[in-house]
Length: 396
Image (cartoon, rainbow, N blue to C red; front, side, top):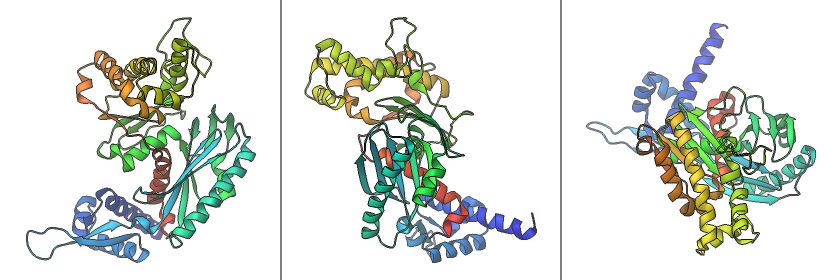
């Protein structure tokens, strides 16, 4: 590489370092930027001046000082741009416009026909995007949409933008990133939905204070997002975190999982298992939301169905803590709306099966129910990419 190329690379790297340091700090002075990054004050000041002109950061207040002039604080201008986070499901597209600080500005959900082929699904996505963009442009006409984060259940090669396999949508070997970029004319960032939820917590939620944590999701399936040294751990074959198919029973009469095998964790603790347990006890067939409502109404059989699932979740929790020794485990997913009914047995079994008193060392956090968490997570991935790519800065 030429010296000019070397200099440009160093400038871009310094720009990225300063930008991410400001984002992480929340608010910071130029002097502190120089101290934390190791860059000279003149380099920090020059890059900050460029960011101020671009509208990417702004000055806000003064910091305390032991003497002399108080340094001016700098912050990210959260409305310099927005991203769209979308979760693609069978029968539903869930999407939210999120600013650079993680605030959800608009959330839309669109019901679509189930079991669509990829081409038909692309048509639905296009219509959904047009509606979201029209609404956004009306409310925030001067704030550009910088990119789109897409979360989807299944095995994803996020680097190449390929959906390897999704049993939920019944798609395989699909160059989804390329298809969506052609369709929507914006940068697309593709990731497994559970991984994206974990990353959203790392960027904007309960995981901000941890470099190493696990995100266990409970609902129609059971998944695991792994944050290691501050970033996602996907595995060599893009399949890390498939805890839902961990064997918890070798009984030949164990219930069959959706994957076709018997004795998986999901067959004992996911929504279908809880519903089956309730139906077996009462003869009543209902939806998962109806069952949650029955538990809220103190239906003993409904409470017991969730409580039994909690015991298996405790076993899974102890297993992952024994394996990974994380700082924390964050529990999320749709079924945290029933956490009151599974937490007790989960905690008991977790305590009984962890080693070295890790149950007392590892913080277990159950997230509050929210409709924004999944889409904010995939939006966080797009925001991360925005902060890490020099070409993105010119979009502002």
